[in-house]
Image (cartoon, rainbow, N blue to C red):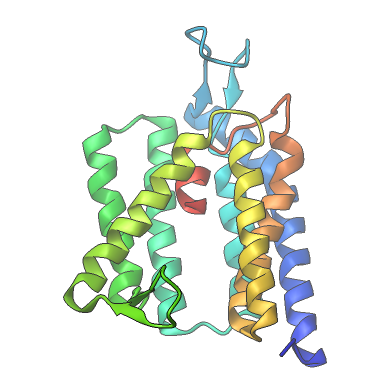
Length: 226
């Protein structure tokens, strides 16, 4: 069953507001990045760019997304946990973009950030049987640790693909629109609003990140999107 007409407006507004805020905030974040030293200076042949480019652009995505969610989404306890975890992981990313943290420190903080939504009720409780007999595997006591592993794993997966202009934000936009489409098809309006806000924030940042990139999202953006 598709959305009722009254459910469509918040979704459209969530996407539009997030896009506009992210688009406007990105140049401001770019100036901030220069001030705090969050700049990627090419030091080897692996770099695609030949001049210093500010990172930390993911902060604009975060700002656009969160403001839009707060304005148009129903803030449930699980969503509160997701937003609080996102705040922590973005704070870690901002610090890391300006003054690189050790891999071990980031990993521990990623686990802590993942535990916040998990303890707020965001838990994978069962997995679909891949053999297609309609049954599910109940995770039981494994639900919490596997969910944390999943969140941290996806966080680092997006972080690792953030190596080419527009790649991470493009892949994240595609994934977000896919989840949004599924939410619309099953009439999950609160998920659709959240995904619309995230997709809009990514779209607002995208013009600045396409080749040649004017700003990178940095760990601030890649870990948040993950």
